[in-house]
Image (cartoon, rainbow, N blue to C red):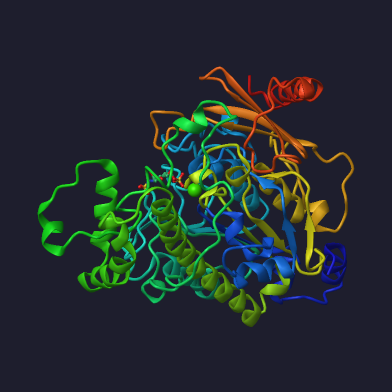
Length: 513
Ligand code: SGN
Ligand code: CA
């Protein structure tokens, strides 16, 4: 029902006393947010590695965004961009290190001012305590896959169970029992999955053990034809994927005596210490046969990488499946409770991820797989079901879009644009024709991806690795896998000049100088 009609009916007293009179018909909002979810692991995008019927329901009943991108492809900064509608250089969250400044205005604070009740459940990863949320129940730091510790205004609690299921259940519990039924709500339900080190739930330990996943064309990339950073990173399946990623658990006796020698090893020890001895044994039983060729060293060269790729996919995708099941459960609850009709549901992730493309895992680069993030939005009665757009969207657009959707003013200092017109089935005039990107967590940070900024149009991408003094230019139409930079190629002289100009224009417009 249009808001004006509801207000007219209310003024006639037709809704007097019922819940709708108090909430108006302003939509509730649920943002389901995951961590490191590649588009190739969402079947709504087509040609995916697995089926994700839960997420696909949102897309089938709403709109799919084929070019949703992030401004800085890493966890904390992505979350800050979503909350503030601003690039890192304005919201102050440049890398995963350091605390998010929670005193600044954010989407949940603006929604509170509109009378919304706000809540966040699950992974937060911004260091400082959440602000602008009436209810928060968050994982500490990266969080644990089993028996995770949650932090809330009341302190720390350990929840029994598998993080994805726990977050899924806490989300439904809040909707069912805890929220204020007289107010519209804004709820962020934020999964840890499918983050490294990809611990599947016990019910799915061997779900994909017999599946042979197709390899990406670029699995055996040699990194020629690009800036030097591509060859110097530390995120290859061949050389950097390790015993933790394969879930090679130490024997129980060894667990008690061997100290953790690195931060990563300490994190891993914490993670596996959360499993019960029985759960650890189930992991050993499930994965020992699968890991054996790698542990025994019976595979070499490409065959070894192929096996690692399959192992990686088995576990990564099983964590996606568990999350997708919980998304399905949440959508069922919305249907059963009658909330579905007046609730905007969004599924997105903090960024995409490499599933073997370029021989990699992880994210960070402005290359396509990690620049993009899945995004689908269901807005019943407004967004045409099964619709999609190829418009260039960024994560800073989410805050302005949601404020626009609830009829609130969009603050002038937000740098994103409302894409609500697309959701209403319109093609807005003058939508952006290029996006800007800036990644800051260069070496010696984990995975050794050089700092860079760049611009992407519908066809071209220009990247500047300013610590290396190197550039890349890609023609995405001819070279969708970004294997050969054409920077400096005379054939692209005009394109290069134009892209350099566009980059300068965006840097100036966004104030990143
Ligand atoms: C951990 C992971 C890295 C990952 C960062 C950031 N290593 O350090 O692979 O890039 O988190 O991820 S792990 O061995 O601890 O899993 S992010 O999603 O939080 O940005
Ligand atoms: Ca992430």
